[in-house]
Image 1: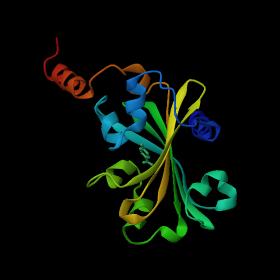
Image 2: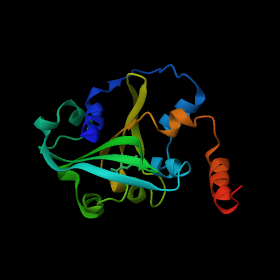
Image 3: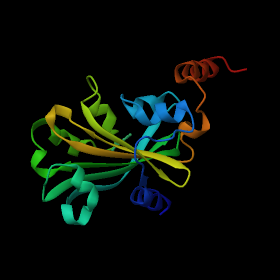
Image 4: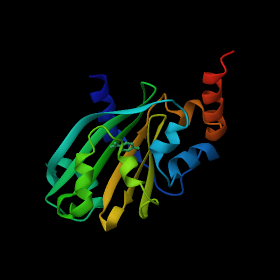
Length: 189
Ligand code: PHB
């Protein structure tokens, strides 16, 4: 139930107009990250996992205004997940893909199961991104962006939940932090 509420927050995001007034560079850097968010988050925990809440085809009418950010399609593939870092909910994410565009390797996206999407999207170099927008739900930060893996458009929305390192460990250098975590495991004090 708790997680359904978390997923529902994705519908409450207020999207901001540019230029966004960032509270600091760290928030800006998290929101504008070009590479895999999963990989970035991995630097702050020992285990990333996801729980899927919704996966399947829905009509454009049922999905609402967000579908206008994608090529017209009667049906779209929807995937909604909560991503956990060491069992703490860090991110709520929604992916939308127009049905007509799901050909070839994009079909793999529909068979990811519990594998985080980023592991597939960022297997090689980051796919082209032509649109990104930041948003807020209360004090939480969110972003949505359009990617073109193999020339096939998809829209990804990510909401950073209160336990996310974006808020809690924002000043840390993730690479240094990872060394500290790994180091402390093997050299307990
Ligand atoms: C997903 O698996 O759907 C997913 C995971 C992490 C993200 C976005 C989407 O940042």
